[in-house]
Image (cartoon, rainbow, N blue to C red; front, top):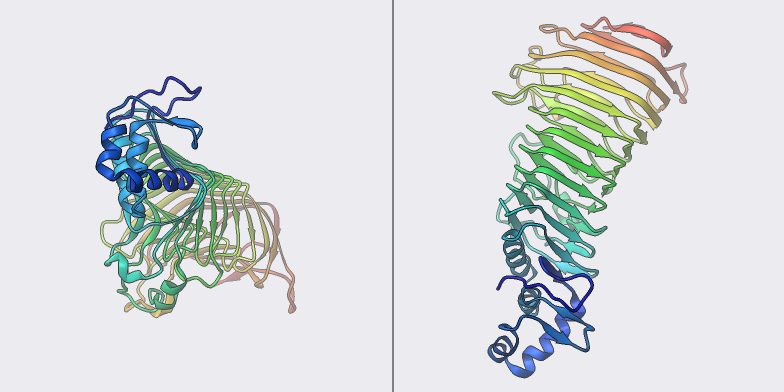
Length: 429
């Protein structure tokens, strides 16, 4: 039934759907003692339920959820709770402390109004990839306006077995692996104070989202976990990422085609492959990328740092108005990169130039240490050379042997100002 207001407690459980393991155990005892039908008959039609062992009243909607969870089917319970909450504006689904095994679940809108998914415990994905039946997501939020995901909890993807089977770095066509958290067509929403751990593939994926904020999100996976991008986005706009702490096996943040007006501030990245625009130009009909700003980031022990990458001999595209500023690098490989010959594992059949046009790009106030001698590498396309590229106040020291850090350029003439260590474009390719 619909939740009803509980008048006897300070904070009513109206519009609040709670998963609490201790309450589940106690209710399961009552259900076993009286039988399910009698239990519902005695309590399901009352406005409120008072139980001395629980010390508070519960709304009817809460009881309905707890009875489902008593059968240990968390997937079914969560789906039912979400559907009920979605019918009431200002509702909240709470998963309290504890560990819960959860299969693939889609939390679908649109809802009647704002809705909060408050995860205080840990959700654990199935370890076996086969249980996902080829689906590419685990927890999916879809077609929701006014969503808040919060609570300090953990989405544990249990990805160790999947990583062993991941061949996407070697094969052009590889089997889809589930992303920990998908946001599809989500608008005017906030994701804060959650952790994504050991995803089988990308940790967080955005598609066709608008006005979505990430605040104090933590992402964790080993450095050798393949294709575990932290936050990947496609065809989304007005996205902000603030105070994220990301350590994973691939890009900390990857920005694909069609993204507009994206800002990442005070992001900590490492291990991982840095913060990347792209890869772009691999597929037909890719949409332009513009309005990307990364500032105040700290990257440590990453394989790359700030990077724009496009495929050669592929499809046309546009990447413009992209700015990296005030970034600290600690022992990173390849700190500053534009790579328009991006072709991992020799997947390119044709080596003709990239057709992606890059313009209005700046690298400013970037400082720290490089683990590779080549600290700046701007390799642009011979068919569409980069334009309006700026290098300002660059100070990247190489700590290895064999001399100081170097800078390489091809098909680009950057505007240079302030300190330049290494001197800009000392190697012209």
